[in-house]
Amino acid sequence: MTLLNGKEIANQIKDEIAAEVGEMKIRGEKVPHLAAVLVGNDGASLTYVGSKVRSCKRIGFESTLKHLPEDTTEEDLLKLVSELNADPDIDGYIVQLPLPKHIDEEKVLLAVDPEKDVDGFHPTNFGKMALDMQSFIPATPFGIMELLKRYKVEVEGKHAVVIGRSHIVGRPISILLSQKGKYSNATVTLTHSRTKDIKALTLQADIIVSALGVPGFLTADMVREGAVIIDVGITRVPDASKERGYYITGDVDFEAVSKKASYITPVPGGVGPMTIAMLLQNTLLARKRRTRE
Amino acid sequence: MTLLNGKEIANQIKDEIAAEVGEMKIRGEKVPHLAAVLVGNDGASLTYVGSKVRSCKRIGFESTLKHLPEDTTEEDLLKLVSELNADPDIDGYIVQLPLPKHIDEEKVLLAVDPEKDVDGFHPTNFGKMALDMQSFIPATPFGIMELLKRYKVEVEGKHAVVIGRSHIVGRPISILLSQKGKYSNATVTLTHSRTKDIKALTLQADIIVSALGVPGFLTADMVREGAVIIDVGITRVPDASKERGYYITGDVDFEAVSKKASYITPVPGGVGPMTIAMLLQNTLLARKRRTRE
Image (cartoon, rainbow over all chains, first blue to last red; front, side):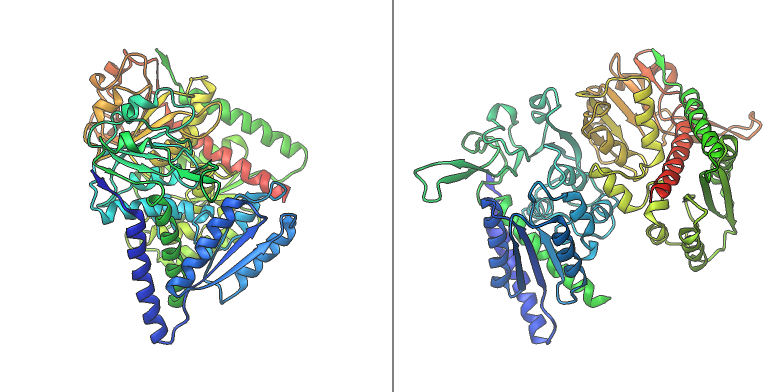
């Protein structure tokens, strides 16, 4: 069994980006600038956004955090989005989800300039991705594809079973894995809450991507010998014995499944760190595209 | 076995649209106006476009055919696209594919105003479809979904196997079948040229959508008893005994497969007529959206 060490690969990618940013500085060019919009004080969101901003600093990006109060109106948020679209200094930005319930997420998403949408959540980017055009690929599925590629995991001709059809992971990874290309070309089955017998399908899978958010969902009896296991579930389980008051766990019963798997991602330290690395990669890409224009 | 009679359902849909257009006229409203752009003289394209224009007339739409010579430059085509975007009288239009080789299809596609893109080929519409937002759904997969719905074929919880990952059929139908909804919610496997054992998958399928364009590809030994069979393949086979010099055939060995199927589409008279009906439906929708603005 080989551990797909997302933390290590993410650090490699960040080093590569940092080196490129270093050269940009030497050439006197503008460095990439990522802005993050956070509305309210959701604990997980604060952690994610904080981590993104710290990563930017470490690799030499400029970063801006726009932290708005929980009761920000939709109108004010849309105004900020429109300012970020117009600001020539901002190369890319993200609006951290979920937004408070009184704000229409779809409306905000549609207001983001697709050219600055480094999360790849705007329908224009999503459609371009699905149609094999150049776009910003959502960071989590992008990270999974990159991890498979860097570990030279064979994907072509394999049967991949994806669990969960979310817009940010399940749906896009099902598309990416089945596209033409040396590191994709898989036959993909997308399963979800209405699938009748998930186990019958996962038992046929060469590759399983679990993006459900249900701790311990994927057990060893659901996995065949030699399968590649990608665990995208990140759930915070309350635990008084931990300093933070919780621990992080994935969808996969790691202890048992890792004994059968050929490759497996740990949680934490697997897909999570890759997500941030690919967000930075998208931001670098956004900067370069803006230079070329 | 029940025949999924696309011709009959398409005529029903056209009658419904014609009735609605009749009411629009009575109210003194502008009727939907579809334009079709055809470059060159490809035989199949001429037939398709001709059929679309005739259908428009029959149901009371206005229609315009822009037929350009084979040697039209990309620049001139883009100029026409931009005129159609600006023309307030045109509610929707299609650019018939394939375009001559000297023209960049992607560039033309991206130039179409998504609000007038009744083919649903623009990435913004494709992305909205994939993200469950209101959009124009490409006519062929839209037609398949409508056919299943009108015949009350159970899709929810079923395992659908799609053969072929084209941007206009395989990819979008794999997305639509697996979305949330009463007439979707299927578990979907998308197979293609790199799939190692298609038969092992089709034998598990409750629903098979074949969109390959290979006559007779789907044989009875690949299908289980009671499966629903949707044949999207439309191939012209040269035949001197026919007046036109060819006959139309699908991907499915109809004679043998129909004996095992619970529902099956014929070719011709199945998915083909539905495609035109849904294009008209999209054009009606485009007109209504423009009225609401």
